[in-house]
Every structure is written in structure tokens, then in C-alpha cells.
Amino acid sequence: MSRLTFTARTSTDPAKAKTHCAVVAIFGSELSASATALDTASNGAISTAIKLGDFKGKPGQTHLLPGIGKAQRVMLLGCGERKSFDQTVARETLQGLSNALNASSTTEALLQAADMVSEVVSGPWLLELVARGITASGYRYTATVAKPKEPLALKKMIVNPGQALSAALAQRALDNGAALGAGINCARELGNLPGNICTPSYLASEARKLSRGNSKVKTQVLEEKKMRELGMGSLLSVSAGSDEPAKLIVIEYRGGKTGDAPQVLVGKGITFDSGGISLKPGASMDEMKYDMCGAASVIGTLQAVIEMGLALNVTGVIAAAENMPSGRATKPGDVVKAMSGTTIEILNTDAEGRLVLCDALTFARRFKPAAVIDIATLTGACVVALGSHASAVYANNEPLAEQLLAAGTETHDRGWRMPLWDDYRKQLKSNFADLANIGSPGGGSVTAACFLATFAEDYPWAHLDIAGSAWNSSPKGATGRPVAMLTRYLQDRAAG
Image (cartoon, rainbow, N blue to C red; front, side, top):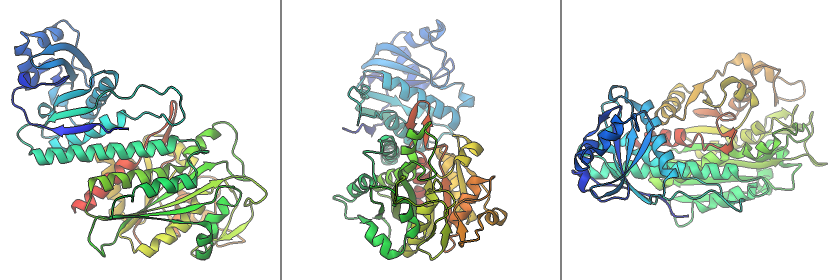
């Protein structure tokens, strides 16, 4: 599939700019500078449309007019009142633009973005959002559909950043936004694929693609024999009932200096979660193909980071397995030994994500990380607590927590800080092992995080529970979160 291209091009006279579709901002009933120039060239066609009430300039509202000057068509883009135009309104506005371009047959467009820049909406932020939003909106699921939706007609987007932003900085912002959008789409595609296609082996093959032709990227896949040698009894207890072998996938991107400690992303990759012997109810069990969205976000984030060429080292570790019931499956009451030597009493085989992650977190020590962030669709309790709007953020390090929360706010891929108090850890006591894999009722998302914290004491660590934010149930589909938060966090670390 060909990628939509974004090009920064400074122009001074909108009426002389040749394009299939000129997009100009309207602030309520106030014409932007570009809209004014086109209105003059058309003898008042734009202002007439506003006076007639055909277009009211509300945020995200669009209206198409016939060609003006060298533009074959003109799209009016509502931005609301200028005094109220901030990042929140800008996101709503650009979502409307993405929707309109998706519905349009135009193959090329020119956005006069300079008119939308202000003290609260910076040029680089706006341009990155433009490219990210339009790229993400062009996603179509086609893998198992005989007659998929029509693809996005748009192939080229030209953006006029104005004189205040250099062409190089403008192009970098567009390129970063397009890379982020592609990373989000990568995570969405992996999440949406059915479990009979997206197996642990499939995830491994997709991870290997990241290192093809790139000397800065190395992918390694550990098989069950090697995991057994390393003592990963917790991870292997999850795959015991499945015919699909587990995989521990390691992707190393070396964009920083040799010897610099890497940022490590650890993803839960349960490609289908039946619950094991603790079988889930049948209703909505099909959505358990999304239980690998943590792994998908690691691959999507690394794709974006590699394409951006960020100057830092990043390692992705994916614990991939399928959780199925069979005569070989782990049973409630079984005790297994994790790679760290900790013994775990498995009281519920449906609390399997923490069992694969704890060995992956122990494995992450060998990289001597600057920080470790695990991402997992871990608990239904997180959905009860936060719904779909925020990912739960747990951390044993205050600066790391604040950096992730700030990255989430900047990208509108938001998180909410949750507690890691010792009071909750008491719920994980077991009479027959060092830890139980579930606690007593109440605070299920917190006790799951406390379980993981036991294996992450040697480095700055954060846990993102994305059970509510990783996919939507109506209409069903993966969201690609939290690729935007993670990528922004890594961009900030590279800049720092």
C-alpha cells in the first residue's frame, strides 16, 4: 500500500497556488488571510456562502466550493472563534478535516496552515497533528474482507507553514507526524487481525521486518527451549495448554550512542486469551484477540521511532503466547517458578498477562535500562475504573510517571496516575508460594500492578494498563493506543 506523502511548501498568494483542493481556515464568520485572498479572487464567493448560512465556521465543519484561482475546489474549514482556538479546538478542527478528506475524491490538497498558528497552537505541533491525523484516518482493515472500504483517495498533502517556520522544521514536523500515524496504524492492524492469523509466530515475523535493511535494528526471537533454559517458568505456564509455541521477541534499535542505556518497552502479547482452565464467558470472547495490543503498541512505537531516526537507544521486549485450555494447561492451584526465582501460586489462569510480563521484566534487567515501561491489556478492573478515555499509569519512579503523563497530555493519548501502595501488596500473599497471581476482590488493576512491581525493583519502571483504551467495542476496532504517548515520551528523551 502506497503511503500518503506530506510536503511543506511556503506560498504567499493562495489564489495563485495550483492545487486540486485548497483548504482555508474560517474562524466563525471571520475569514483568515488565505480565505480573504481567495474570497477576493472569487468576487466574494466565500463570504456569500457564510452570509447565506451555508457555512457557520464551527470547529471541524467543512464546506466545498467550486474552483477559485488555480484551485480546482476550495474547502472551507471551520475553526470556531479565533479567541477560543486552542489545542483542544485544533484537534476537533483537524478531525473534521480528516473526515472530509476521507469522504472526498481529491487526490491532492493544499492546507493553508499558517493561518491556524498562534501563541497557544505552535506551528510544529499543528503540522505534526495534521500528518498524524490524516495518516491515521486513512487506515482501512482489508486482510480478511472480500470487499473492504474504499481506500483514501488522497495521495499528496501540501502544507503551507507560513514564513515563521523554516521549511526544514516544517518538513520534519510533517514527517514525524506521518511516521507516528503509520505506527498507530501498524498497532491497529496487528490488533485487528484474528487470532488464527496473528499468532506468537506471526508477531515474531512482523518484528523481524523492522530490522530488514536497517543496520541500526536487530531482532532476536527466543523459542520455548531457550526460555526454559533461562528459567521462565511463569511465561511458559501460560502457553502450556496451547499448540502455538510462545515467543520472546527482542527488538533493539540503536539510534543513540554506543553504551547509552536504552529505554525498554515491554509488551504483553497474548494473541488469544480464552482464560485457560479459568475459562472466560462466551460473550465478547472474540475481543480477546485484542489481548496482544500491548505487544502491538511496542511494534508500532518502534516503527515510528525507527522511521523518525530518533537519536536514542530503544529496546522492545514482547512476551507472546496463547492462553488455551487443554490437558496440558496450567491449573488453578499450580505453583510455578519465575525467571527471578520467585514462586507463584496460580489461583486464576485468566490472570495470565502478569505471568508472561514478570519474566519479561526480569529479562529486561540484562539491558541495564534507563527505564522500563510495560504495556498491557491487563485487567477488566482498569476498564471499570477509567473507562476508555485514559490508560492507567503506575510507576515506581516519580520523574518517569510525570514524563509519561506529560507525553500523554501533549498527544491527547492520556494517562491517569494510579497508586502502588504497599497496602495493596498484602492481597497477594499465598500460603503455598512467594506470591499469588491474583489478590482478594477490590483494586484488581492495582494489585496486578503491585504484582509486576515485585519484578521491576532494579530500575525505573512504569506500567500502562491499556485494557480500556486499546480497542473499542462499538464499532469494534483497535485504537493504536498508546503509541502516540510512548513515541512522544521517546521523542522528548531524544531531544533531552
